Length: 373
Image 1 (cartoon, rainbow, N blue to C red):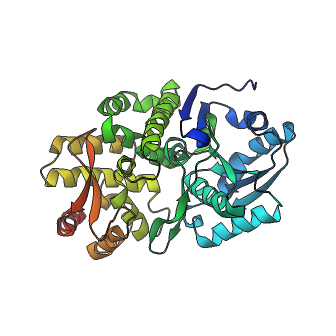
Image 2: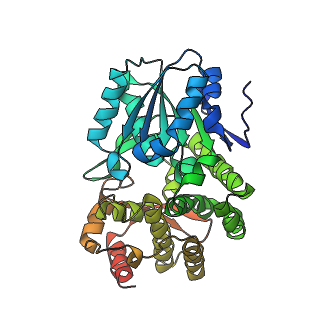
Image 3: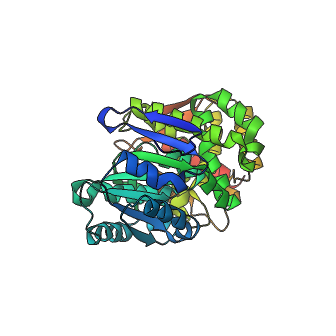
């Protein structure tokens, strides 16, 4: 067995497609030994972006080389705009040009963008290749690398083209987070908070008490990541294809995705920042509908703002599109069913629920009011 230090291990029990999430401080340096042991005789196609290639790729390739594993690398531009048809073609053709066979493995080395894109490319190349997630951002480690959602964006909206394709293994290297810019780490933290707001108020309270240590890189960081992964694993096991309870993981995302689309999937608003504003809006809208206490909305906003995250529409730099533009984006959301708006609403912290018949007029009026707040 490899001597890698594994602080936490989470098992995603999906029968023949089950896999483990390993969490530890130096897993990138042990990746070669771990992969050789788990998947003997494979070759590897690494998909990453320019930013991660500078910070992490040398560690991974040195580890693969030390284990005697054959590998090729595809390096893409960084940023949300990489989740496109053009870059999907580049990855698929790169994997084919490297003569990788169906039994070989794709490695997604990066944040959520690379994980989503590389996973989708793996799902369609040679009618389906296995892939491994090595998430290098907090957002990817706690959310997007787990659960098998893969895809790209369309001009019509975010993540509208994709497939459910589970990874074979997730290696979450805690030391990779040390190279993240503070803004990127904070953006990932929004997804951490989400797990408490869905159905675990005790976890939200724990985050309120431990946020400073999580940001400082203490033991609470690994514990937070493991708790998030365990939470998501439970949901994925129950509802892999998101026909029911898994939709709760989209708390804040309907508003957030609309804001991301309006800002052109640019650095004006990172995904986690959109989720942060979206979760505050979801709590505020729930309060407007008489469902949730107003003090919970304020408590959520205060915690996210203390973490350095935007919490209101006015926090987004530049001009936003009209309410009509935002409503059009919301209407394209994947959670729309036969034209009816579906939102994740809440009865308070840790009491989220799925509401499938939200009045578009009420959403429009709420957004109008929030634009002036």
